[in-house]
Image 1 (cartoon, helix red, strand yellow):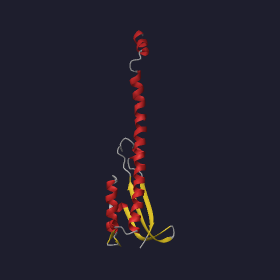
Image 2 (cartoon, one colour; image 1 turned 45 degrees about the horizontal axis):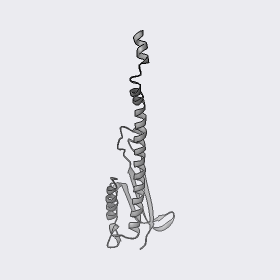
Image 3 (spheres, one colour; image 1 turned 90 degrees about the vertical axis):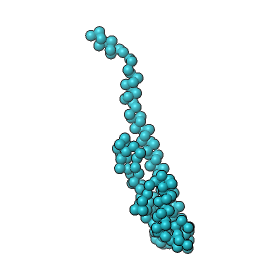
Image 4 (cartoon, helix red, strand yellow; image 1 turned 60 degrees about the vertical axis):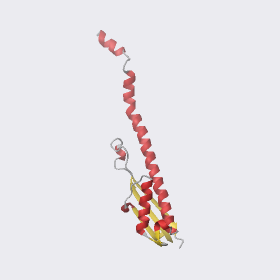
Length: 145
């Protein structure tokens, strides 16, 4: 009985136990915040890229045209290469470009839509982000030519 009472009063491992109990939730909060920030940054980067690409089509920049004529293949390659610079791996199936469409009921616009499934850096750790949310960026720009 004496040993049991002495063991109950001993404070030697209390800090280690408290740390063990709090470390996992704290780590989940920190990593979750970082991953949420990455997802938000990726969405903003894709939106900026969609706007830049729609403008590229609308003003017939050389990155999106062959001698002033719109090129779907060149435009898609432009989006993929610019996304790779931002660390967002895209494929041609993720990008939809249209040089002559309507935007909110007004004709004569170039539109770009980029779809991307965000992948967490730690998918096993945060199971909610394992498959990742689908991110979508769309932009319109009036054709200048």
